[in-house]
Length: 212
Image (tube, rainbow, N blue to C red; front, side, top):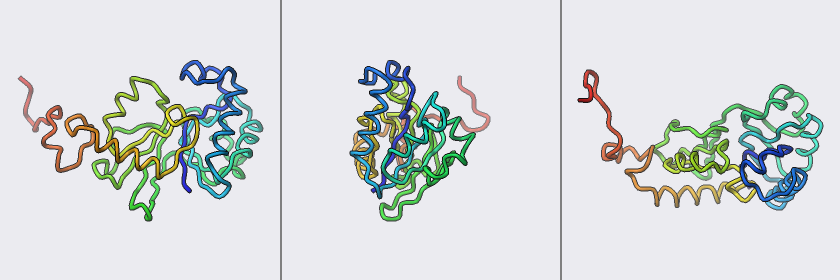
């Protein structure tokens, strides 16, 4: 099975208050994140972490946490993965891959996944349900969630909006399907090609034209 997650922030005490996480201490949070991961992910599963795995932890501590987690793990770097990015050699045995950005093909689902820590407004094929953008970074921030809710074919895999556990590709694709179906065309940032001319809040000026 294929899973995705983001923004675990192992070791980051301040994230508990900032994101209203239901934990009384960073130790409780770390323990619950490991427990949730291992009750969701099996030893043979693949997990893509879309950034911000840990914060303010020494390399050996980060490595020890990764060793506790089930599955074959891949990292897409986020803005808080400085230690891992600077010392990739130290984590080669616990990460199957480490990248800044990844276009992943899923022939069995007829999908291409654009994996990035940050949510994008536009990506290659964003109008086509075959091209799915997975991201993190925004946690459960109400303003950012509201903005991202206007994206079709995209999903926030961050733990703060997914029960503090990785989420499977099947669940992600079903949630995207339901969201696309419910999102009015006129409120979509990236509507299908055939509907783009009918979106009333998008106006495109021709060269030489000016607003009056």
